[in-house]
Image (tube, rainbow, N blue to C red; front, top):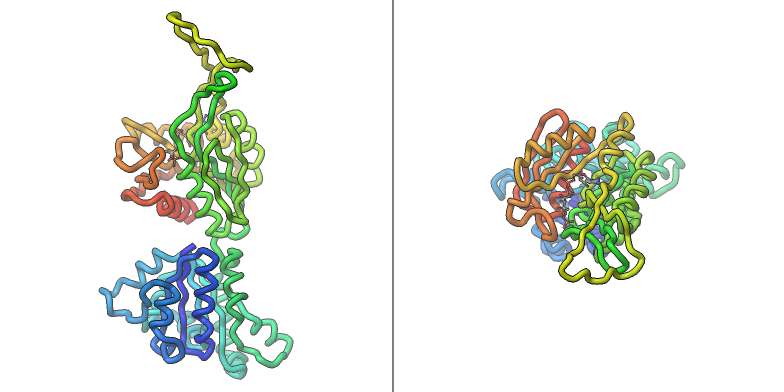
Length: 389
Ligand code: PMT
């Protein structure tokens, strides 16, 4: 996950390098954005060293748009410590420095705040009103302060420990898709001919695994059903079911889909399978050659399209070589999809096996979003942002 850590001017800022270190250790990428006052408590060099990225603190340093690129880059923004001042600014829509501008630009993405201030300031009705406002906008407050205030315990207003803040981020609390369950299909299917041969295709599973990772990073529970691939995914919110044939994928997908908020089907499923599978190795037939009788496999995507209930989102892929958009549009309608992600084998660097892809996301209402050639991870995030917004 890509985490932006915003730092404001409170004594607890000295704990932020530890927070950054914990996040990095958990495998997240981190970039820091600080107010001028924050740098009275923690230095630029420290923040840049622990995050291994440049610090953002000057609104006018790099062409006025760094707050937008940082918003596009980050999956979540955590403000620690969050002073009464920054809480008040956000509640009032004030954007007069790099961090407050970033906070307004970050609207629509998860924001977490770890308040820290003197207990009298914390108890002030204006601060409490601002906190309530931010909470009503979905901004997650983390820290002992809230509970302690209610119980009248001393130490009110103290920032939560870095471990606690990191745990909230790592558990996906406050993330956009928290509480949602999504199904992803990935990889090829193998259709057995005999005990040693099969019909397969070149899908590596990379696109589907990237989708599963991005959904889990966004807080969703993921049911990843994959055909044969050497790829692995290690995420507490991803459950992997490994299958071999289209019929096995069909059985697994139709079982879990009713419990899901949505499904993204990126697997390259064999349309046909041999009508019979020999339980031994077939012998060579010499000059007579060999003829395989094929029968059609069930169409998983079309079946889910028929099962789809109000509120579920169904996203298919279309891998085309010609008449790309017309074919994709036809599949979108015929299979009752909300979106179809078109990738063309005519685009260099797109499709099977490679680490990159170039897609056009077509929605049922006719809107198109075209991506440049990007990593499959970036494509996955683009797809998820598009189909969930
Ligand atoms: O795995 P990678 O190497 O990363 O490659 C990624 C990919 C190229 C496989 C992926 O980006 C992709 O395009 N996947 C869909 C490939 C495909 O089979 O497309 P299609 O146009 O034949 O199928 C259309 C849709 O129906 C797909 O969502 C497919 O999963 C689904 N389908 C197809 C047949 C079938 N029997 N059941 C299905 O669910």
